Length: 232
Image (cartoon, rainbow, N blue to C red):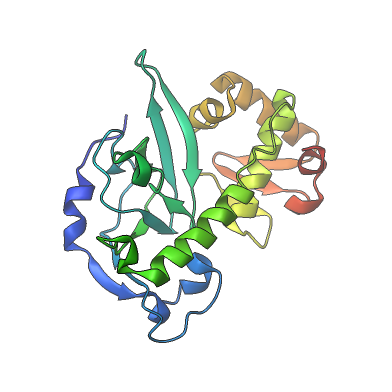
């Protein structure tokens, strides 16, 4: 079970960063920003595995962008059960949905050692045209790629499609990646039992489509060419 820390309260101790000067700017915003663009963030202390960035129902103060690592989004349902709503990877926004509701819809927990930047949130809509423009573009991009490529697929293809989508979002260049989440968390996100995920990975390995060693996975073909991804 993850441990709870009010890191949203600790966020004020972060370091201010001008995105134009940051080496991760292309991954976060898709391009190099010109000097003086006006986009500033607050780099947060590193989150170790199991640490909570913000909790479901906690008051929204600002959205964040993942710089390194992986965040798991958990939702507690009215009956008390918990599901994995998604994962946020480097270059992706997290927590923005809380802007309209005033509170966060999910609990964001570090799946591994993770670094995030807290956006310098304007007090008024007119407070930061540069930030709001970038948020609109980035949100549109995330929504465009948010369709689950595994929807409606059999269990084995669902797991394969998830791994390929994860590799694509991580932008791996050598078809190898380290999954920071557990088999149970993958199953919760895909709507499958943990045992089904374990069996699916074993079958994918036997068929030569993946090589699996613990949490290390090697795809035997690039994500954009795989049959599972094409089937979506």
